Length: 212
Image 1 (cartoon, helix red, strand yellow):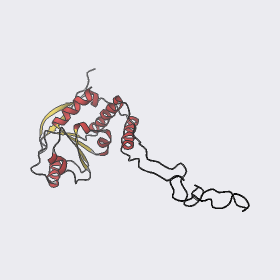
Image 2: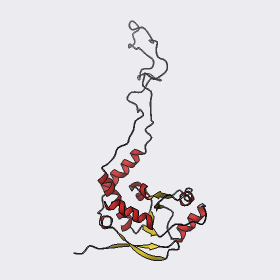
Image 3: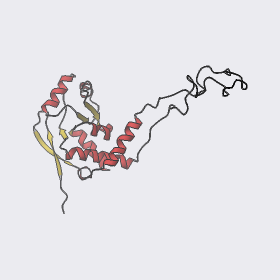
Image 4: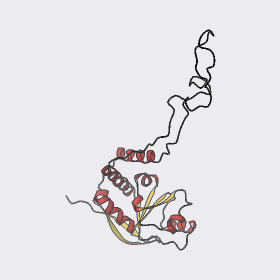
């Protein structure tokens, strides 16, 4: 049985079809991997955590050096410091301390997850390719006009092949539009946006990255 070839149309900035490009089989035939996608998103969010939450243990709370009352003869429980965790204003027991939440999945799992995320967008009809992005000036309204001509919605991940200050800054004020360079393409951003738009050069670089 012959493998089905999946092709994606290439549009001009005016949404005119000017050709097609083949979607690699490693992406097109990637089965849904919900749990792997979940693990990837969890990993990415964990790696973005600042890990700066902190509480003071009794050793860090100011004061409490004097014994509140004598050890015996008062009828009360013995106590050595007003900064005990049992007292109001005392320290915290087992509170959070600054730490790193970073961890990594294997490289093969990360690559497979990205393939699965792109395959999901392709099955939804939410994967688009444009031959180039050329804005006449660095203005947010020019990016809005560009996406409007392509008949894309408000939530779009734009993937470019290399640094393009005009495109990256023009989309900066659009809360649901994000511009990524190809090497920064990741599962979280692919799934977070409703549509994914590649430039033709970025799509070819992405194919080379995921073909290995």
